Length: 328
Ligand code: TYM
Image (tube, rainbow, N blue to C red; front, side):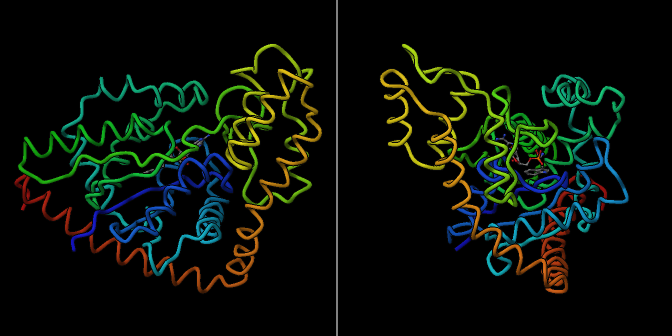
């Protein structure tokens, strides 16, 4: 049977948080366990260079993501795990793809504009090039499914456009990939505004946080008097209820909603129960992480094997593309 391929990646900007976990990693895990798919998961270290970063800590930051991958249960026996820059074919393919993409299209991408707002001093060509490299990451494996959060949809749309243009202009056979959607495709910030993100202090919970840290972070989430005519649809309380549903289930969320319009919610109790439920899910992840932290040689072996396997596939796609474009 010809398996469908999957590719996903996460930038190396520190340890993974619940947004990465629910939006991307849970989908990565689900597809890894599905025998119809062949899964490739990388650390997008080249994409990390598109916003300010510290070259002195980059290697360690990459390692942190690899450890988180292994800790959550990405299994090198089932998935190919690798580091993006160790497969230089992605960059070459990205250059070839750039010949089909207009500058105007990239300049108008919402993700480009948002990143530029956060880092106004950083309007580099690499940042503009971000979606093209991402398209190359995906299409190097002819992946059909890409587990990511909803914020990545514009990039996957560009990937589909590139695939269509390459196929019509050069007769290649790239698939048009779809995002693999999880229940947590948009995880809100604990601050009550926007999405959970590493760049907003107080907005996130890391996968490596212990129970006390989770409690402390949840304590900072804004609430209200706990009572009212209608359950809030936006802001701190609405977000807490989303977390309750994601970690404790719909039934408990409904109980809190009933309490809100009735006798009232006691947020100290809600946060206590939620913190415990989050930690319950993270505890086995943290235990597995410790085992890999103690065996850097094993991690190194996994990554070099992964890079070799990824390179073989990406090389084949690159060769085909070069031939189709008249280079060889
Ligand atoms: P990054 O590191 O910004 O995000 C990694 C993944 O986490 C998801 N995510 C969220 N999902 C739901 N709610 C949130 N609050 C939240 N925050 C982050 C993101 O959607 C993403 O799936 N460009 C990619 C990295 C990449 C890539 C690729 C992904 C490079 N090449 C090829 C897939 C395929 C990114 O956003 O990384």
